[in-house]
Image (cartoon, rainbow, N blue to C red; front, side):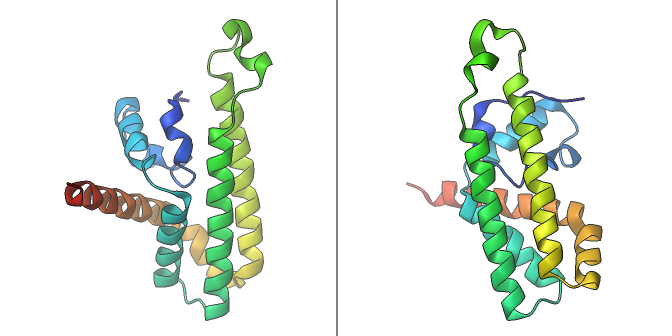
Length: 157
């Protein structure tokens, strides 16, 4: 089932396709996405890179390349979600949710390109380990981002 989400989801590259594994209901997914939308592409890329550094044996050169790739992908994903819908998708509201479907498709394509580029940075063993840990990485990154967001909100006057 595809869930149509609000524009608050715009800031969430990493959470795009894997949040469904974390939240069983559409309401819980929307609530989670709202919280994640308060993070920046830089925060999401850093959290993902930190997790990969911790769980894969990466050289310093690989860490730099992975960090650059993650940041590039996070920024591109952010732009995809912030992009306004083409007029033909909004006029007359003929296809409700068509803009979100278009964005999801673009983000899936971005994810495939990210993995393809990552496969050239990592060796075969590392990439296989990355593929095996994708869902646990996603969960850990989301938890880390939510925890840091909650701490920032508590610290704010």
